[in-house]
Image (cartoon, rainbow, N blue to C red):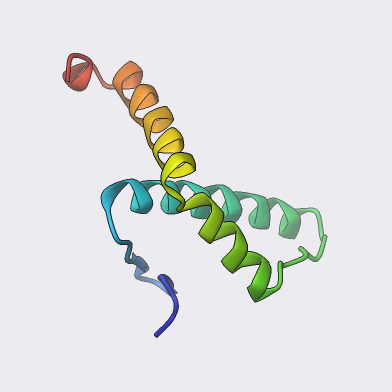
Length: 89
């Protein structure tokens, strides 16, 4: 359908994107959002979800070429610092 990811109970997540940078940026956001959600549940706070239009606006703006490449380059730099085998790539 029109969704880009699905969380499958007892199986994990399946996701799709148009390219690798999009996938990495989306998955990093998904992990961060899941962490915030879990912390809310631990504190007994009901998390506020954004409206579908807000989610679409966020995804559209973050998938624009410049923001996407800037975020992708940030994650590449972090990976190169953390993983010795790819430092010189």
